[in-house]
Amino acid sequence: MPALYENSFARSRAVTIASCDFIGILSSASLIKYGAGKDDYAIITAGTALKLAYNWKLFNRLILQPNVTTAYTFLNPMNLVNFQSVNIDQTQVNGLTIAPSLRLTYKNEEGFEPYIYGGCVIPVMSDIKATANGIESDKMNLNTWAQFGAGIRRRITDRITCFLDTVIRTGGRNGWGLMFNIQIAI
Image (cartoon, rainbow, N blue to C red; front, side, top):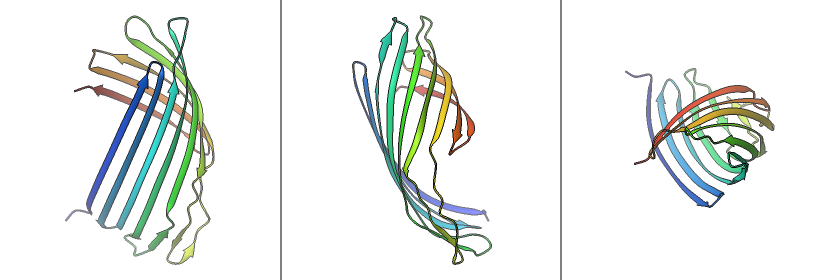
């Protein structure tokens, strides 16, 4: 018998608008999940994000891109009972963040595009209250954090693009991240 049985439904949409050097991306996602086994839980979550950016071309090779991302997240965890029969209740989360940043990209003839970026993430709403078997925990929230990174993007063909990216976060959220991605247009 498996340790966890899980059913879920997810849905997402994204719309990209680009005009010359202006870029706008609007995305939304939702998820309903129920799990049973050692821990029983149900989660409803939804969110939407908007990113706006403008590309300034400098000296024919450099692109300076100021951008801002705003995101709203709704999370409603229900009926969480862990394997020790502890009943954990949590308030609904309504999270709103604003993330301004600046990116500098160098474009060369071979299709490689190295870049560096820096910015911050400002959680406007993020308070969470939780109880475990009726015992109330301290209110939890996120603090503002800064993030700095570098990466390289490579367009292999008209349909295939890949990138490698690293980021360092400090402040309300600390850590280091590494991401690799391959995009294939159909």
